[in-house]
Length: 408
Image 1 (tube, rainbow, N blue to C red):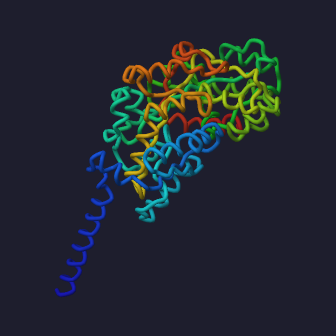
Image 2: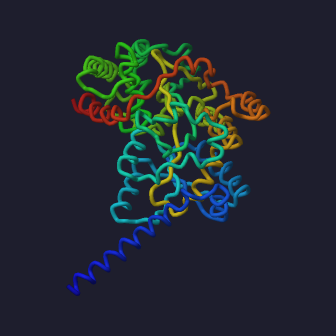
């Protein structure tokens, strides 16, 4: 009995300690915003994010980090890492019970958000605490409520929005194709001058889903419905037929596909292919400015449209500095930070901020931005916009593309 009593006492103390630790770890959820900023002052925040775009990296390192330090005395460290690797790291830390992790903010969306949410790798809902989000964003916007079909529930804050476009060298191509059928003919007429990244790559997967949309009776048959292989079989079969048809006339006769968008961009910059692609309708501007892409680079979209999405910032379950993460995210959502990101100097991507909720002078500054010659008009982008399908299509496309195209 004595041993049993000691065991019960030990378990009681252990549970009390765990309860106390959990409440301390989540104390930030009950803080006022003033208290959050006080706690964040003088701290370091580590932002883990994809690092494959130099314009994006420069925006963080040269614009955002110095101004965050000046305005809030927060040191922002950018850590380049692919989203899948970030989630694997968090999963390992969760399994090991590590509650004081090195990651404070992650750049995330789509299937990665779905996986993070389902595996409880995120800190929980926080957007209701962000002054800038609640003042300058349409908090009820459907684009902020779901992410590739997964309910957001305040677990990530909208950082930007992008649309998928194709880029071409106007010195080589006088008139780009206007549909996937025309692209098919163009590839046959210009063998070796087009290719796309593998399905494992985010941009390559998006290209393949565009083909799937184009082969369906209506794109909405894909993006408005959950994945059902039986229902999409006709569109899927047409997709594989399309990809097999163009394969012999792709770069390297389709025997090798670029591993990622960075590799495809390099082929384009070297003139080996005459087109590249990707999310962010204005990303070419900084590459043209830096002499990476030719000055004759222009963009186009194909019928039936251009898939667009919102991308987000989130806080992992074991951030060692949640107040700092909140303050940094709030800063990155500010009108000033979004305006700098909107300009083509660094990043040049579109913003999820609501112009109607901005002060008139700031609204005018956004409207005065010249996004560059390579960027399609806002009207053309809006009329071609197509929503993302649910995240399950991404994984399905990876598996099916490999089986049907790489190793049929």
